[in-house]
Length: 296
Image 1 (spheres, rainbow, N blue to C red):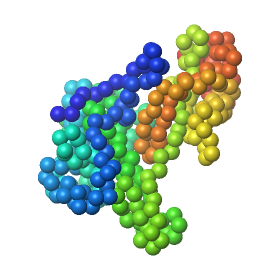
Image 2: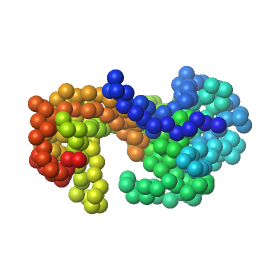
Image 3: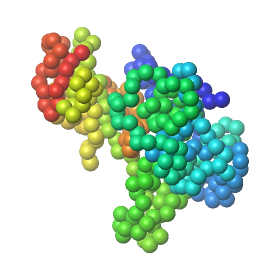
Image 4: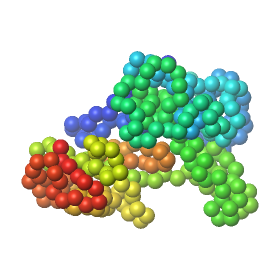
């Protein structure tokens, strides 16, 4: 049985977060096996191997009281589709992912952020995505689903060579694609997106509300890293663009993959320049930029 769900906490001595829901894993990704076609073929032929089947970025999940577990199948029961090696556990069991046919699991369109009800899911087996199942899965299954969704998203959107337009072919056990015309190789993309918590000396945090969101929904600040930009510069720019604040004293606290579709989110805890945060009053922001902002 896979281990239970984990929760991240801030280490009071180091100031670094523990492993976040989608940053957990307990298997070896086995990169040294990806180019070994004989080993990969033997692992796929082994009925002891397990396959995670995806449909619209969702997998079959068995929800129980306060926890969840992926429903995995042997290779002989896996559908046709783009497949990829996910890794090997300590017992030598190989795990694969398959992006199966749309509707094969009965999955509909993934719910958007914030649209799922904030209540525990009903017990039972049904398709679910990372937002719904990720925090409830154990370390093994959280890692498998996160990696599988990331690879499936990349394969679905990078089917052709960016140089000549030819259809590319999966190689390296699904961790790259090769163009048969110009022999160029292409690897999965990861788009960094910073996320940051800004607090004042009274332990209030700064929250933003996007005008397109429903009333009452707020979030800490986040944004994509632009080309040629460092993480530190991205934090400073995004905070300035969204709130008008200047920040300094950036403190890194952890990171989490966010494959929706292909982000990696390093988290930081910056301080406003000059530590003027303690002058905030009420629930309104010091100055609003692109989005309404509130302190809490």
